[in-house]
Length: 300
Image (cartoon, rainbow, N blue to C red; front, top):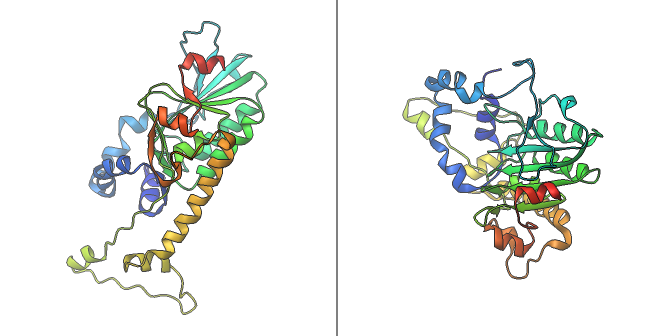
């Protein structure tokens, strides 16, 4: 399969739970991905070569973390780590960083790969707890609920504590983080929230027509509603797509309310409008449990 296929496919056709400024900042990269002239540059990128697969390496050893807490036995693991090498009584740290796709691509793992990893960790008697180290602006709708549900289930078997270290947990990233038993920031500038969804439609037809390309769509007589939501939206009637997004956000909000339950206090500020919050305000609302150090999280 061509490198970058999943990423490009998700960008062009997917619905997103992602912080808007992050998405807009990456539009130049998206344009390069679409441009086939840049294909070779991506296929040979150092970032892609840096992604670890069992098929590409003989051994993927979990990396030991250097902690201030001397007794800590914390190991950084990824979906392709040799978990049999993790000693008894260890804490596993799973790093979920960057935009999250359903299927892994370039230098990122997919939400399904992370879900599989959490399931494996839950069954290992030698792992006494899991740290979800999250720094993500969000990602693709598809796969997010599966990963969040998996973390929620695992958190009922052994403790899963989320932490954001000088970064953000936004949109899909927050949906996932909210499923942890507890969630902490390390800096007052860490940000949380962006609980919402959006999609972007690009109408290529005018550009193609300017190139002399005639575009005609012919549907089967039984297919009156096929692609209707997209066609209506391009005709400035977005109601059907808005309804799809409404259903996604309802599930998102419902999951956060269930995961954070009695800790949420929305009287002063409503966290469900898509707004981002710095750590102190996020704690006041109940989106997180406090501002602490990594050593504190290890002790927890």
